[in-house]
Image 1 (cartoon, rainbow, N blue to C red):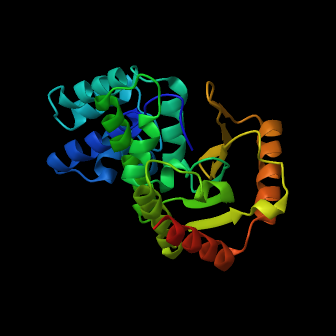
Image 2 (cartoon, one colour):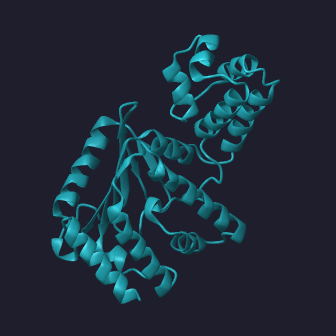
Image 3 (cartoon, rainbow, N blue to C red):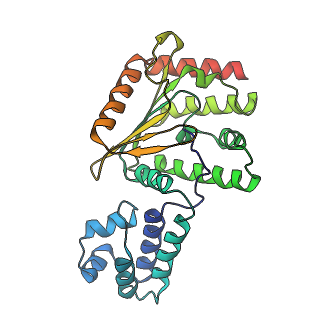
Length: 275
């Protein structure tokens, strides 16, 4: 899926601060349970903040800084992450946080390989296509996109179910070499235990997804959420009626898509043609 502006080069605030909190806690020689007792919080809440699944406010950051004898360092890190996030749109920060919290992501993409499955060169070619974008911003965006993909490497990362239009496999992006590498990468993802990739063939004659790309996210610690994408406006909504409509569209697309082996065979055939 493609975004309307460069992706942030830094992790979403809750994730970045959680990393800092864990580092300071370990340096102080404290376990999560000990810090929880000192702050009057539950261990699960401390764990959620360290994993980036729960936001920390300034009061928490100040209390944790004191408890860990960080000398103001942890509080400074909290302020830095908030300040850095302010340079990027609210919806983009929300999207990254949603991906971090979800245990199930379902996506439809009619035009390009979604960001979670892009190779470095494919992503670079995509970002270079934006008007007036500078080389520095291209590289910043590519690095951020690859960083976002790391959630698929987590031991308890989310499941990712993707339906791609067959046209994605034949649309030239970058070069023949880039396309061959990208499709080989898609074929390789078939071995990933949590990635479920299906191709919607041209002969399905389905118009359900022509309005644009979307992603559905869900998990026990979050409401079902939909991300809708267009050239000029990207939206995130948890409105039950809109999410239900997107779910219905996804089910129709997934139902008409090729089964796993047939999808993999088609990807491999297209990859050979690019070679």
